[in-house]
Length: 236
Image (cartoon, rainbow, N blue to C red):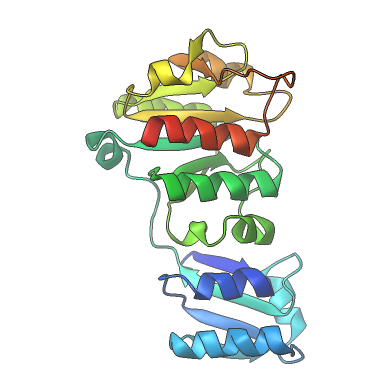
């Protein structure tokens, strides 16, 4: 069966319908009603999206979470990030190592798309994945940027290096400032979990470690804020 992208939840579905993406079908619970649902239906009709009425059991089988009686499906437009193509343009890819908070994931994807990154990579396990909260927090960015979910981060890093990428990990303990490395491209920029940072194996595979110099009393930044600052240095 062809893999499909699913967008659950009323706000995420409505936001997705405002983008230039071309959804395939809108699955709508027969009991769903209200102004939000009416707005979704109008937006779907405007884009000529097929509307399928069904019961909540069908929606539950499609998505094991809070779908709010609404699921939008779209064809997977990419089998993954084209590493060779990104490398050829000296592009930047963001790699998330154990970012489990969906708000952080969504915010990072939003920053990555807005600042011109070429893709976001995360692992299947020990990550937030792509869910309703991620899609909502990304403000529609998931419709525009390739998000690849891999089974093994170390193997992805090896593939990226083979394609010509430098791998730059972010760490408060690093000796180099992010500004010193901003011209080191093509680059995979690794963002680790708050508190624990990158895993040992991930850090060992990095070519460089970089830090954001802080002047205040607070010694660290939220993962999504750190990602945004780092990406700005590399891409703007």
